Length: 624
Image (cartoon, rainbow, N blue to C red; front, side):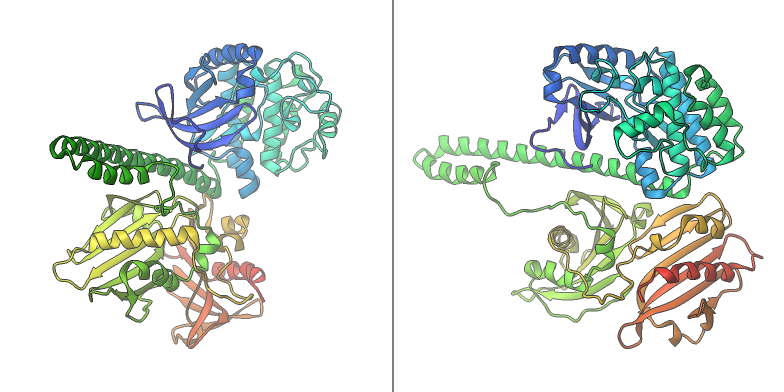
C-alpha cells in the first residue's frame, strides 16, 4: 500500500479513505474505513468509464446483483454510489495477498494448501451462482488468501466492462486468456460451468506454478484453451483428476461447484497453508493495521493543529480590538506565521516515511547512523562507540551548554509488539507510532516498528546527565532524527564482495528441505540477519552475523561438513548449534553462519545430523 495522493478523495460517502491498495482496469482501489471501524476495499471508477452512459447502466445492475452474494469465501458488498460523478463500490477488505503473488514468492502450494484452495473456490462459486451471477474473470489475481482460506473478489463486476466477450480488432480479449473457458474465448453465451473451468486452470497453476495452457502471446494461449489438451502432468495425482474434469472442453462434462467441493474434501491432506504463505498473510494484515493506526494518529494531529490555528486567530482578533494601533504589527506577525504554515510554501521536511529493504538493514552502519543523526540535534559526540549487544551502538553527545546525553541505538526484531511492557506513547516518527518503555526520569526508551517486511524495531534509549532531566522528550527527538536519516540516506557498511552480510538468510534454504528438517506445519519468522522455522517436531534458526570466531571457543569441537570445517556445540541432543566461519574480519571477530537446531521434546538424538544437513545446503550459496 501507499499513501493517498493529492488527487485521491479523503472520503467517499460516509467512508473515510486511508491508503491506496492498487489500480485495475476499472478504477483505483483504496483502503477505506466505515464509521463502524470496519475496513473496506473501495473501488472508484476511472473518469473515462464514468462518462460512458452504457457502462454506468451495466455497472449499476452488477452492483445491485453482487450485493446479493454472501458467504465465507467471498468479499461482501458493503456500500456503493452508482449515481455520483465517479461511481464507486465498497466491499469487505480482505487482509491477504492474491494467489498470483503468493505463488510467485513462495512457489507451488502443498497438497494441504491445494485442498484448502479447491474447497474454498468451490464454496465461493456456490454462493456466486446462487445469486444468479457468473464471475467471468476468475483468475489468481482475483483470489485473495486469508488465514482460514481463499476469498474471491470482483465477482460479477467484470461484466460491466463487456459489451460481449469476444476478441477485439487488435487480438486482445476482455478477461484473462489463460483462465477463461473455451466458450468465453469464442464469444459464446456463458453459464456457471465457465467459472468451473477457470477454477481448474487456477488450481493447475497453484499446484505447478505454470498455466496449463501454453503460449507466449494471447492468440496462442486462446488457441490452446479452445483446441489443445491442458498440461496437467505435474499436478499431484490426488488433484489431477479434479483438474482434468474442470478443464473439459464441453461445459456439460465439467463438475458442478457442489461436486468439486465434495471431491476436494476427499483429498487426504490437512487443509492448511504452508508456513511461508501464512507469513505473507500476516504481513498483509500488519500492513493494513499500520496504515489504519497511522492515519488515525495523523487525523488527530491535524485536528489539534486546526484547533491551534483557530485559537491563534481568536487571539489575533482579541488583540486587534484591544490594542488598536498595534493591530497592523501584530497582524503582520501572525499572518506571516500563518502564511508559512499554508500548503505550497517551502518548509524543511520532517517526519519522513521510511522504507528500508532487508539488505539495507543487514548492511546498516549503526554507529555511523547514530552519530550522523544525533550530532546536529544534541552537539558533538564526546564518547567512544560501544557495542553492548548485537546490532546496537552507544555513545554520548555534549551540547554547547555542557549537557551530556548518552544514547543506545538498537536495530532489532519486532518482538517489542508482543511485549506488554511497551506501551503507545502517543507520538510518531516517520508516520510510525512510537512505543515507550519508561525506566526512570533521566532514562527513557522509545521504539518504532517498521511497516515494511521484514518487520524491524528501531529502539533508542536516552539518559541525560542532569539529575532533574526528563529523558523521554530527548529520546523522542533522537528517534525522529534517526528515522528521518533512515528515510533519506541510511549509512551502510563498506563490505568486501565476499561478505555474507548482504545475503537473505531465508533464501539460503529450500522450503522443501526445511519441511523435512523441522516437520510439517512450518511457520517462518523473518529477521534482518536471521530466519527461524518452526515445525511440529523441530525448530531451526539460520543466522548470518559478525561475532567472536567460533574456533576461539574451547567448548566447540571441529567437524567436517562437505569438506568445510564447522564448529559444533552440542547441548545434549535436544539443541545443537553449528557455526561456520565464512570470513575472518578483524582481531578475534569473523562473519559467521550459525545453524541452531532444536527439538520440542527430549529423547530426539539427531538434532546435530539435521543441523549438518542444513549447513550442507547453505554452503553452496555463500560467496567464495
